[in-house]
Length: 313
Length: 156
Figure 1 (cartoon, rainbow over the protein chains, first blue to last red):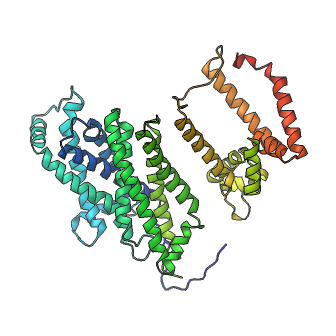
Figure 2: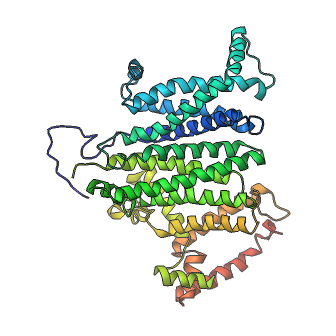
Figure 3: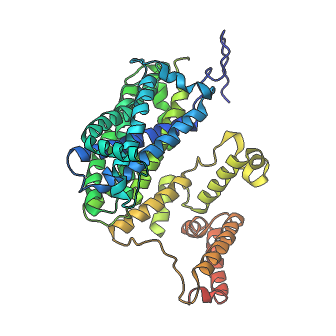
């Protein structure tokens, strides 16, 4: 056991010597937030580009996952709160310098927006669907009329949602592993890649899956590129950054990161996707399952490892 | 197969095995469910001494590689099918699976008593001319021949 004597006027056992405040609830939320962001981005993107008929799962069916994922994610965030009844205080202020404020307000808009989006497609997806009330039918007609505007808004907000899951961590200037500006884009591409994986899993259309798979290959390769640069940044950094680097290079998170996140969650599925495009038969659930697993694992590793890294040595 | 085993011993300095990975998984699971009971157990406790993590063993990742490598080879040589139960023509799926589970448990128990399975004890052992390895190999095949008659209905 490594013992350490800390002399401090503060008695904060959850923060000193290492932060251990954030558990599975946060990792799960960051994963589901990115996943929902990815799904909604591609639904809006393919609608705006006029490929609604060509990509039915992306634009319609898969979007059902987004509000469900957000609901589960936000419930886990609420569960994590010590004073659960005070969550509404986030909505009493707008702070442009706080990622948490950005996230809270983005979610406040994108969550109902995703429900409206699904609502406009309910009759197309379930032909026997009946809204029962006249005002709901009127509202549906209005939403369908402004679907393009909704799509643009949803696309912009989904980028903010996915990127904020990373910036939320990188804003912690006292945690060297998180305090890097690469984390925002890294969580964005990872979230979009998991979103694509979920849509690919649901889709039964060969053409649609191929289109999504091509985009996903690009996102996974970008993610690998960003991971390499994340670690190069740590290598070129100060002693505390090197300490964070060593957690992943021989330290406690070496296997969970390189084997489970990078190899199993990125390199292997991208290899399978490339093989699939080359004409090999791949069971369609295998690459998405691995990507989703890798994405979840990535959040767990980053949240757990980040709390151990610190400036205090 | 023999070459693979010899090369493994040459490169890694130890034999190739599979059953050790199952043991590590069982110990790790027991350690998560009940850490106190796992540490107090004579058998599990051995693998949890001095803060050692039971999954800190290359065998576990070798098995992961075997699964992924098998999948990749199946894809490259177009042998991938939908999951199915391999069985004899006169046996039901349930019966075949039950027999497989019972057989698996007995084999797993045997590997712990014999300190290794077909790959770890018999093949790796025999490839280094270890007497124990050769003995395991002979007994493995002899007992398979002896018991095959009683379980033939599962396959023919």
